[in-house]
Image 1 (cartoon, helix red, strand yellow):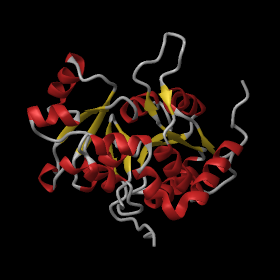
Image 2 (cartoon, one colour):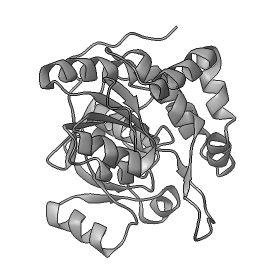
Image 3 (cartoon, one colour):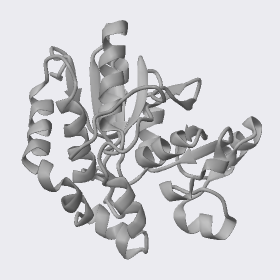
Length: 260
């Protein structure tokens, strides 16, 4: 199968795309706006240590958390029952600094797990787009690696046996386009079209995501504050980078341009 190898900056979707990019040896930016990447970024701002783990939250995930002395990050509904941080970014607090958490999610954590053999894995979203792009440009030059941005998308609830579960989400696509627009080097046609989608929508990105299927789903479940938090652009300098199975913030002393 032909791929995007001739280009320095690429775009791939979902877990399969993340694995493809990892096998190429690319630096990978995983984008899951609502809300894995946004939650990891917010947790990193507070100094929390996030260990991504493939879904679902089961005895294996809980045993892993116990072995490393970490707490589980629950789904939003489960967190209301068990307490503690959830996949909602607003549940992380300054008091979480230095604490370890294991985070499973159907999309972002799954894509991160698929990308673990990559040259580097970064969690990117709207909130830290410029900081992530600046770090990726620097590391790409140092490591001599291409960059692949991976919008994670969502999952269909009821696919048939013959159907793919991936449901592309505009929230991840637009954030990927913003990050790609700031990356150095040649861009594949797939990456160029993604940048074009962002540039066309840049004046109302927040409104589009707010009213998207993913945004409406969260709002109707009572998590409008999560959506409002996640659709803000360039509010964070955090750059969560996967090292030894955990995300570490590499952006504390970096600067990012603020959007108008």
